[in-house]
Length: 362
Image (cartoon, helix red, strand yellow):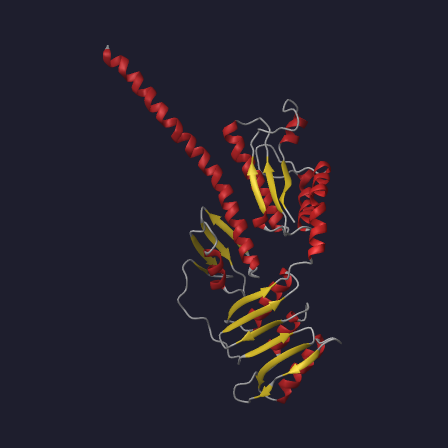
């Protein structure tokens, strides 16, 4: 008889110990998606800040896989991604063959002789040794295409039949890329590294110059030090000053809702994400919160991670639409803050939502 009494107690103890383990197994995978989305957003932002256009960025936990298009320096991509906080390893995939470990081979040397192409508000400068007079004249013709009436040609080309540039192709591509914008900017090639320095008007121009440099000098290391000047203070202040009221009015009229049990924005409110991204971009210095919410159909334990995934999904969409990833904080609040009764279908749809508000701005 004593044995019959003790056995149920042991069974109950084992069951009690198993419950936390099972809950952990259920909740941890739900949280992992949010972590991977955050790492992907911050990695894309870090690459964009260096003027690098990656084909795609995917995460398995904290391990990154980056697809690198042709013409983009894979080792530069690796160097940027590995410095992102939280990334454990980086796998680079090229246009054909993936490489899982850093290469120890030196970059291929180019046959091009060193050169420099630069611009100021007053002039366009070309400093290079060329093979003959025909190449010299071809470069002058390319400069003439982008010179404009307000600049002069600062011709520093010399003729060297042995080591000079055989044609104007590389110089022409860089002249086209540098022609955009004002102020000082230059592209200097020293035989192994192309250094980009100075100012360009925007991120797109920065990426364009980097691509032109990589195409002009295949195999060279691209050191992109180009900077984007801050917009005039008065313009930023005015735009940011009115942003909270504009965003509040927008969110009253345009909702972001989700399909039940998922982090997928429903078709009716997808245009709201595109429109709100344009609104957020009007104040680049502001910080925002994307708050995810759910209805009460699930338990509190499942609603919180679902709301976090909804916030992360909207953040990822906004980043793709040009909003800075490090200016968006994604948070989930589960079913704690309904805005409509959960007793009706319409109310539950309204509660399956994401809301965006300004956290900080100038």
